Each structure stands twice: as structure tokens, then as C-alpha cells.
Image (tube, rainbow, N blue to C red; front, side, top):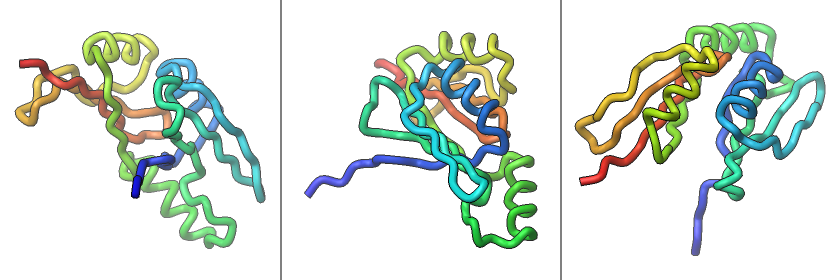
Length: 138
């Protein structure tokens, strides 16, 4: 039996700004763009991982959610308290420079971590924390 990750979800409050970041800054390809009941889901992914997708979704992607719940989810997103993703890179420092040059909010400059990676961290346009790590070589 084989079990593999296929999709993960990241809440965004502006799909066009998210696309400009994930597609234009990170270099991901757009694999799908779907609208339904006034909401939008955009699927992106790394060309190097065709079997793994990130779905950029509304903060509360439930057409039956109450207005109060939608407000609460939007507030959590605005505070950067929803979701976080860790990406792997083969060059943490170059990745950091590219993303910083694009104007992303820096949370952590590249540093060696005691758990065996060199990593850096940013916020995407919606406020989600994204980490980029590189395995250290001995």
C-alpha cells in the first residue's frame, strides 16, 4: 500500500496577489483555477513535483459558513495564525535573496538550525508563514 501527499491548502484573502507571489516569485505553475458559489480555488505546484499541489483557497471555504465564522477566519488569517508551509530548496540563501527582492515580508534571515537544516522564513501576501529549508551537508 502506498500513501502519498497529493494536496495541501493555504488560505488566501486575495487570489490575484497570491498568484503573483506563488507563480511569479516562487516559480510555481498554475494547474487549475475554479470558481464556485462566489469563491475561488487556485491550484499551484512546483514543476519539479507534479504529484503535489497547493490549493489557494478562501479563508473559510464553506458556502454554508455563517458570516460570523467567515469574519473569524478572516481575522485569524490577517494575524498570520492560519496554516504554515515548509518548502525544501537546494539553496536557502539564493531563495532568500530572490523572495526578499520581490518585496515579501521577512520573518527570519537564513540561519543554521540545530535540527539539521539552514532555513529562512517569510509571510506570503495573505500573512501565512512560509519557511524554506535546505538540508545541511556534513
